[in-house]
Image (cartoon, rainbow, N blue to C red; front, side, top):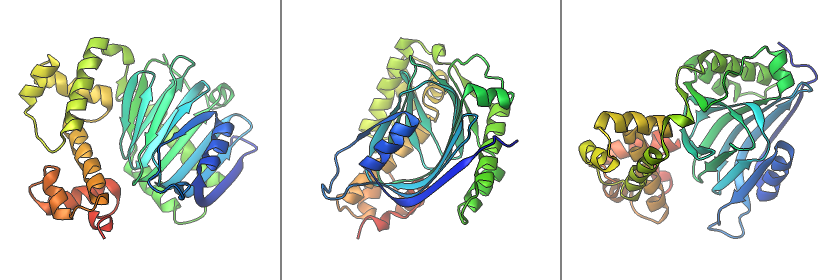
Length: 309
């Protein structure tokens, strides 16, 4: 289904703070950049960004980039329908006061309002392959999409066949028709499966969210430790099964997955400080360095030895 009058722009380069600010002016995003280790290095991203726009109000951006400098972004305008597909990498999001961890091979569909803005955190040192698709009401009517209630957000797994198609497309320059086709396929899967794991923000009380955040902070503070589920449940004033389900509902990942990610993020920082791979593996809670190397490569896309040279 052609959206008519499609324009395509594709850029492969180093992106600076000024580049992202110009991008923000176009798509109503506000950027905040963390302090750099090298004040003379003005890079924020390196890689390719392809964008597509139509007269009907469909905007699609496909980014395959390495994050050089940690930065945050905030949506400034309401969006009737927004879809974010994470092909590779991880992004920390916040919808209003609700934190969302968007993992690899996962997508979310949501609607943004003035009261519920979307914030995102991209951490340096990782590779991101992500597709973002936003639609106006005119595009939604044209595609005959049922928006539903608009409460919370829908999260779903991206089919492996579509993941493979997107990765294969990276090997050649995309035409506007190919990029549009990928976006519409992703949208079709999202609309069909948006209720497979629907999360309503109102399901968790403020007290429950506060207790879950305490558990999350505890795990982040000491990721090298492996706390017992019973102890965590007691601190959260929940049963172990309730803690597991509510933590995943709130943050989009299991307790174990979050702890593993915290360990690997800490390991990344220690390697940059000059610690050896074996030493880092034990410091972040791995008894076998080989298991650490496998987990690190799976998370960041490269071996830990690349940082320790």
